[in-house]
Image 1 (tube, rainbow, N blue to C red):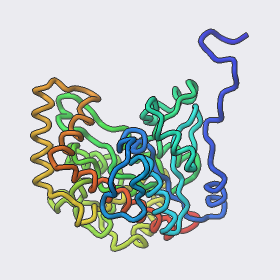
Image 2 (spheres, helix red, strand yellow; image 1 turned 180 degrees about the vertical axis):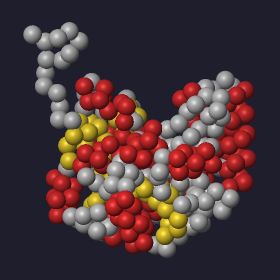
Image 3 (cartoon, rainbow, N blue to C red; image 1 turned 45 degrees about the horizontal axis):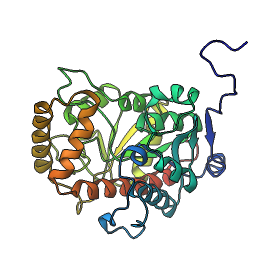
Length: 331
């Protein structure tokens, strides 16, 4: 007899690792995980002119799909196997092919999935894009050591009034993965985020920089990193050594945005400050604050944040592949 409130049909497999990804992992070849929250809740589902002069961008495709395909191609061109993570009908896929990316990118009901949401989405056979935290959960299950994203979540501004800390930080602290990002999202309280990473024991390795990047901006040395790696090879060596001492913890590899597309710190900060005042005046609260701020910053910068965002993701995908290639096979 089926208990009340449960489904009688068999549950879908919880995690499905694509054959290409599994072969690469089994053979010790480099693999880089990619998230899909940017596909489902990032760029629009309509075509967009080529940003950042990237030849691999297809302006005829919906922008969200064009970006996912660009990141896939970037990882491959740099000598690694991409493992794009996303949930389809309750199964968490580690390695999505183009047809699956198209389907997820078109789905306007797709959920934004953090770690806490995966169980419910699996039982309810939902589809969704994975955040940094949820993608790290997939990395842990599959055994992937490198994950490239844009910017991690962290401690939100005014956290002393309303505690709001992203699950990304705790997930990074407990998952032995090198997360390549342009620091953390600019709309966060970045000094508090860096302090939280320190308290959690997460090393922040600046890739050719002593400054903690601020996603759209390259940052300055007023907010620094734990150590600096000259290149991807040294960053990989630091990660491998860290896992000898702390085998269960992650490493944040902070890769600044390309200088050509970065937006100056002062401009970003002034824009965010104005947007936050607008949010207060308009009564925007809770989960609605982040998309509100991002939209206002994009408008105020004349869309330059989109070019910065895409350049960050493309650069981090390449850096992630280079780090994955340099990691010892048993790191």
